[in-house]
Image 1: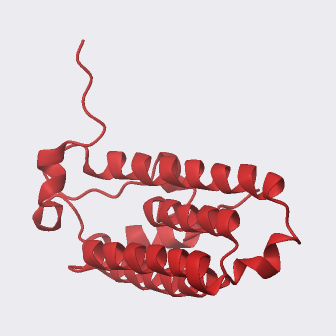
Image 2: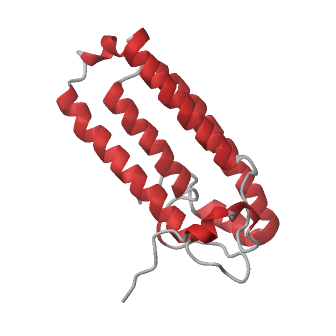
Image 3: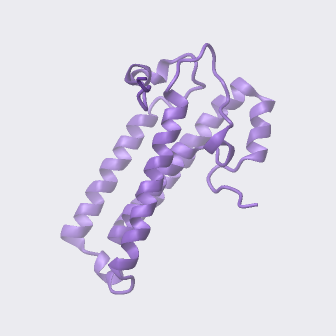
Amino acid sequence: MIEKPIINEELYKDHENRPDLAGEHPFGDTLQLIMLIIFSIVIMADYFIFQTYDYFRGKIPFIIRLPIGLVLVAFGAWLALRGIQIVFRDLRPEPIMITEGMFSKVRHPIYLGAMLIYLGVLCLTLSFLGAAVFLFVMFVYQWLAKHEEKLMLGIFGEKYRNYIRCVPMWVPKVF
């Protein structure tokens, strides 16, 4: 038995124009790429030039930061990739609201996964300048998520409004 690929490349390639998806910001992918590039450059510049991490390095040993950072990166990657798989794997006849699985815990697991990856890298590097960029990254993801929610409200109306009331945007309910 041949398994479906995690992400069908043909379906993902032009996902901004797929009629079965509720939509996303037209520059969402570009903004995410730009944020990743800026974050990477700042982390490297901080490490090789500014060295702001030196202040924090002695306060939090690497042996503690390493497992925390790796768990955040691994869980963030799983969350983002699994979310992408759920949303983009199949072509549907019309847009649907995905509210099962991880989407029943948080409304934007793909973006949350990406932010956890950034946070994991910050745990590993302790870059003060990287933390400043991360604050901007969180703002951009919040802005992208709000844009997508407006599109979802336009398509699904009260059904999506109820989903917003029941499911948190970023931090899952514990009880």
